[in-house]
Structure formats: C-alpha cells, structure tokens
Amino acid sequence: MAGQRIPDFNHIRRGARCRGPRQGKVARGAGEMAPRAADCVSTVYTRYGSAPTRVLSAVPTKLDTVAELQPFPWQPGIATGIGSLPGENPLDAARVIYDALPDFPHLAELPGRGPGADMIGRAAALLVDIPVEITARGWHIAERPGRDLRRAHSYLSADLDALEEVFDGWAGLLKLQVAGPWTLAATVEQFRSLNPALADPGLVADLAVSLAEGVAAHVAEVAKRLPQASLVVQLDEPALSAVAEGAVPTASGLSRVRTPDEEFLRERLGQVIAATPNYTIVHCCSQQVPFGIIRGAGADGISLDISQLTTPDFDKLAEAAEAGHGLLFGIAERSGLTPEKAARSAAEVWRRMGLSPAQCAGQVVLTPACGLAGSSPEEAKKTLRVVREAATILPEVVEG
Image (cartoon, rainbow, N blue to C red; front, side):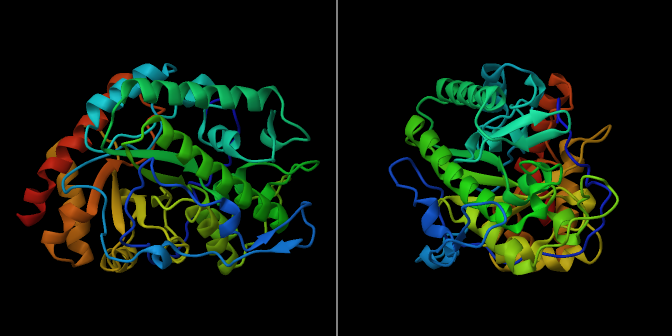
C-alpha cells in the first residue's frame, strides 16, 4: 500500500484449507439491527498481554442463527470488485464502480491518497478504543488518537459521502471491505515495541474485539445512509496463510512469530465474522488458502485468486462448494485477457473441482484477482469490464 510498510507475505507457501459458511444468511438491509460485538466475544483483555478479565458467551457461528437454507445473495452470472482502485477522488471511484459493476458494486478504497486511505488505515479507523499512528515502519498502536487517525477517519467519511451521493436510493447488493483481524495483527506494531501485534495473544484478542465492534458500527452507518441496500461484508486476509504457517517475521527479521493455535485462529476470525448478521466473505489472495480456518470461522463465502491454486486445492475448494459456500473466483490480470478467456479459466477450475456445471454460475462470482490500486485508471476500468462480461457468459461456457 502506498505510504506504508506492509510485510510482503506473497512468497509464502502454505497448505491448509476451508470449512463452512453460515449458509442461508441473507445480506442485511438497514432496517435490521446489528448485534453488539461484545455479545460475540469469548474473552476480553483490558491490558495487552494480561489475563482475561471477563468471559462472555462463546463465539456463535452464523449457521446458529439461520433457520432456512438460502445460500447466495447474488443472481447467477455477476461480477464484483475486490476493493481498491487507482486515483484519489472518491466520487470518481464511486461512479466507475456504479457503471462497471451494476449487479454487485462495492465501496472503493483509494490507497493512492496516502496512509489512512489504505486497507490497514481503513480498518484502523474502525477500531474502537485502540488508537494507531503512522511511523517510519508503518502502522503502530499509539497512546492516544492523533493526526494519523483523524486523517483515516476523514478519508473514510469522504468515501461514505461519495457512496451515498452516487448510490442514492440503491436497492441492490453492495459490498464493504475491511482488513481482517489476522492481517491487522500481522501488520500493526505493538505499543512500545516494534514487534507485530500478532506476537501478543492478549493484544490480538483486544484487536479482534475492537475490530468486531468497529465493523458492526461501519455496517450500521452504511445501512443508515443506504437503507434499501443489501450489504455484504468482505474481510481481507492476505496475511492469513502466513500467520497460520508461522511465517510472519519479528521486528528483527531474525525469527518468526509463534504460530497461533488453530482454534485461536478460527475464534478470532469468527468473532469479527459474527459481528454482523450480513453475508460475509473472507478474501485471501495468497497461495495455499487456509480453507479449514476460514470455513471453521463461519464465513459464508471465500474469495481467492484462482491462478494461485495448486492440485491439492481443488478437492478443498470442491468441499467448500458442496458445503454451500459462495465462491469468488479472482481472475489474474494479464496481457490479452478477454472475457472469453476469463470465463474459460473459471470454468476450468470448476471442471477440476468435479462438480455439476449447472451449479457454477449461481455459486461463483467473478472478480479481479486482487485490488486494482496499482493499475492505471484505464486498465482498472478494462479489468472490471472484462470480469463483468466474463461473468455474463460463464453459464454458457461452463456448460459447453
């Protein structure tokens, strides 16, 4: 992201996988109240690294709250974006999305504006009672709110104002993206330490509680501005594979942060997923997507870059599909990419999963492989056009 140091975990090779969403959850409109995030918290810490001070109810899965199966909030043959776009004008970005993705638009992120407008900065702006600031190394937990956090709040407010103006009266799907708790913990440094928050389990628990409350408030704010919209939440977890593999470096770079227990990984991610009743997708664009952790945390959908899949991944992906998870197939940008080639790439993945072609178009949404902040405005528009047109012909291609 522009203007900040975020660890590069793209070289990591990992091999876990995914298990089950809360099928049947419908994207929530504005008239429904989000639960208090604290109601979804199993343990709360008052001091980083201290013992727990109060224990609440166990983290529920969204399946616990679903009475009937209604798997996907989208119609067959549609596309959406991942999140980021080039440029600095939120009104322009909202108009591009409105025109390019009429069936499944999303709230744009514009990291080109600088720190605070990036993925981590937006999540930081949502944290409750955990202030952060920018240092030469990146985002760092601070003693008190300051200029950096005010700037992040200002960027988010401008983005929401633009969204409200362009999408006034919107009554369809709308996706909101937020960095997930593990990517946040792997990226933000501790207070009075250069090590990532990930190295302190108590602080990780605090971050998950804070982020869950912030996500619930964020969704409620968007629902208030666009009361007829059906909101979908996407948690961006590009660092989840590295966290689960024990590949996140300490401040010195000479060692790695201890791998969290898998149950702890699921619970903290599940805490944030459970913060709203909305259909929730976890996006992980790295190799070796940890499907088991994502499914065990209760995600409804999984978003991934299909170019990163290896042979063992197809069985895991098929298990996720058979369990009723929505799947967002990211199509990698490359020279000469056409809607036909993109649709064939997605259809080939589905074929290798060994599932009925009739299922594919209703369960799969096409997306770019990752955010488009590094593209030129024209390249970004072209990529969105290609994935949208590929999605419309996918039903025919997969049956062919």
